[in-house]
Image 1 (cartoon, rainbow, N blue to C red):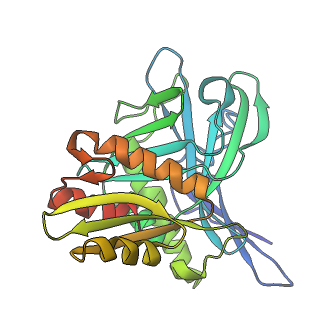
Image 2 (image 1 turned 180 degrees about the horizontal axis):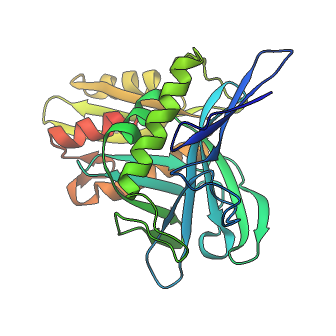
Length: 287
């Protein structure tokens, strides 16, 4: 049974399974973009344009399916050509950022008359990441694949049909409402260790060499074993933080992205000279 509320700028569509009691949360519309006024097909998500000559759009919203909190992302195939292993980075006004790796093959959900094929992917999102979207003003996003990079550079969205709310307000409002719904429905966040995947897991880790203050960004299937191996060579090395990914390929992509972000601070190989703010940002990214 669908529960639709009309008292919010972002109107949720809450489905409750009569037999299992499982809940699905999606959106009827967001930012007061009420269908079928324009028949735009994307009233249920935030739409941002890269603000360049190709008019590429990133479409996203938080949803709850199969007892998982997910970031639903839709992309135009003709501009993005999204594939497993590509990354989408969101940058906030305080210069913190969140990186999401596409860890499954995007599927075609429609062939829009103006935008062409639209592909969709679902990516796990944590409570901390949801909170960041709900509290910190949005600044930019970047899509990156091996040979393609698209960047959003404007903080206010206006399309050719009608003005939208200030984009920052729309994003913080949508994610705040999602968290309110989660609390109202008494949906709990699972601890990271309970999010088991049906694939070989791999970790991105951050280690510190206390003898010289430099940090290592690497990957390992067994980070605790990797830590002991390095400590046998140099006892001053210790683990700072880790994050598990469902496949080694996904972890490799994240590692590569982080190496690129901190390339100007590289000392050698996977070792970097990072300051306090860098470490704080990395811990948030790897949470």
